[in-house]
Image (cartoon, rainbow, N blue to C red; front, side, top):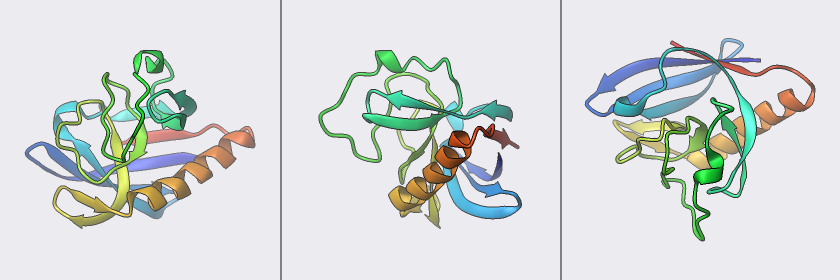
Length: 141
């Protein structure tokens, strides 16, 4: 499965885009322009994130997740302490310098709505594809 991330609009510190799978638009994205993942193709792996206490779709399998502190409460806008690019829920990017690609539905500039439900649906597609032995890649343009 190849997920396409198309960046459509950059203004200041935020970049809007959208994800497509097989030509079908899945969701909108939001990234911090100061810490965006460079354009290219990356493998997606599911790694246990210590901070979120669950598996997360990570673009870099060498992510130093063992250095992240476990938080007692994690909201969708928690930032990671180190650069660890991953797809995750969230509705704003201020202060995020961890390479996150936030997913949700476009609301207005620098804002996404329904991040958790959008992320859960995308996560399930990635998990099922990986469990079937397929390779999952994200291509960023």
